[in-house]
Image: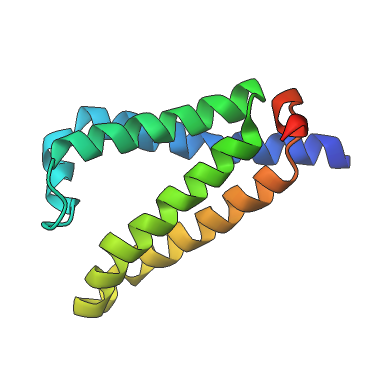
Length: 125
């Protein structure tokens, strides 16, 4: 497998879970609202907004449009999840650590993919 094929396969494989996670936010929004920290008002609104953001990030990758910006925003959102949801949960229960580590890794992957973006809009930034 050559470098270009690996890069394309990798970016699409990276995007698929975000598309699916985003759809899950709309299918199960009421139940997911319990994960929104109590100090943040709005509950299910944030579930739907983050679901939309996850879908938008995946679509950006699939269409190769504004990938650099989308990956920067995705990484920021994932780090916010780490700090507001996963870190407090892990402090209280070490069984929550895999979600913390998953989102840290995904944020790193998003930044890496964004740094390699070759779409026309990303080259202008």
